[in-house]
Amino acid sequence: RDPEWMRVGAELSEAAGADIIDINMGCPAKKVTGGQSGCALMREPELARKLIAGTVAGTKRPVTVKMRLGWDEGSLNAPEIARIAEGEGAQMVTVHGRTRMQFYTGKATWDRIAAVVEAIDLPVIANGDIEDAATARAALEQSGADGIMIGRGAEGRPWRLAEISNAVFGTPYRAPTPAQKLESMLTQIANSTELYGERLGVRVVRKHVAAFVDAWCEDLGLPQMAEARVALCRIESPAMLRDELIAALGGRRDAA
Ligand SMILES: Cc1cc2nc3c(=O)[nH]c(=O)nc-3n(C[C@H](O)[C@H](O)[C@H](O)COP(=O)(O)O)c2cc1C
Picture 1 (tube, rainbow, N blue to C red):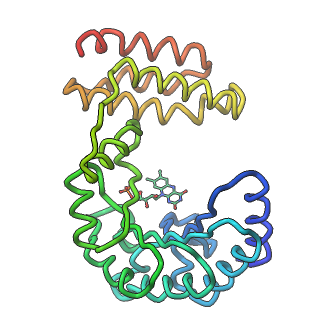
Picture 2 (cartoon, rainbow, N blue to C red):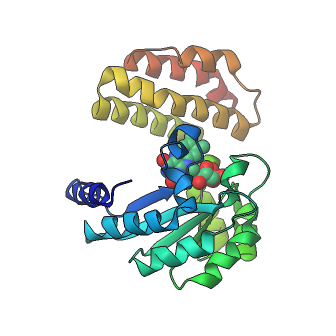
Picture 3 (cartoon, rainbow, N blue to C red):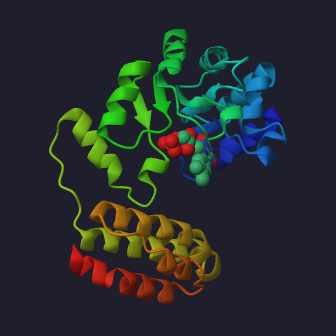
């Protein structure tokens, strides 16, 4: 809530190698909004203005702002917050097409992002419920946005981003083989333990392993592996996580 800390945070982020700094004004979680952070900032435009200005003052990197449509149906003020962001030197705005009170229920309404596109000259990115080429095209068409952002649709399957991008632009795309997918997950496990250490690294990466297993089954048209998934999420050692993942998918890989 203090612009000075936003300035310091931006400075530290740039020194740590950040390419951009994205301010999150979209998080709906009670523990975040209760502290007047995340989406709660959309209810306090003047504070939001100061925090964006503080961030911009701390870095030469582009500062971007992520938000929702507004707090609730009675306060759809994303265009106002976007204008403030533009005025304070932000360089891009992303809008999740839900209100805070919707949390993750219902459907994102991409057409309501159009008011933000009209309100500012900055690039606007549409977000929410985009998970394949069809929803990507629909979101772009309905919002008139300059680009899209994908979150949950890429969980456990990060190659989905290239798949959708190539489909939208009409460029060639070669899907990774099951073996390549598994290899990428094993690399992620190794990277996570290298970055966070063994104990925390395994805990951080387990949810990605779970999402990967779900996506693996879905993409191959196989039944979900509920038991193996639960067992994988209890493993504490990186080597065992790796071995058990390979064992769990082994038969499935042959099936592919
Ligand atoms: C588990 C989880 C964590 C998230 N963390 C962040 C975050 O740290 N910063 C942020 O701007 N948005 C965060 N989001 C919101 C997403 O970026 C995105 O706006 C939202 O999930 C809607 O897009 P999607 O339907 O493509 O997932 C998070 C969402 C989920 C489900």
